[in-house]
Length: 117
Image 1 (cartoon, rainbow, N blue to C red):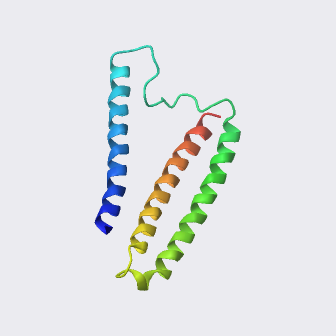
Image 2 (image 1 turned 60 degrees about the horizontal axis):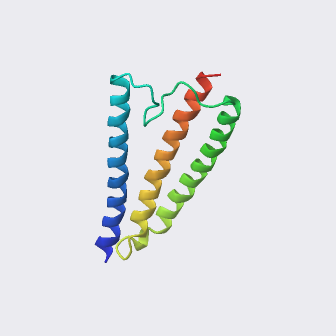
């Protein structure tokens, strides 16, 4: 039962990874063949009509993700005694990694949106 639960988490990630690789291949093909349609993965040439607002929203999301990271870190410490009885600590650590990924994405967006101003 525990393995099945954890394997389903991995399978979900693998499905997303395969979709992203497919989109990447499609975007490469679109660019290499000079196709007129937009690529499956958007180019970084335009972030929207209001970059200042985008930077503001991204900053707010980053603040929330950093707060989440702090809370998850506290939870890992609190669940330390349960690590051999439950998978809770592992799941919190996985969420910490997801939060780090979210921060990386938001910092990327913010950095590019700030350049475009």
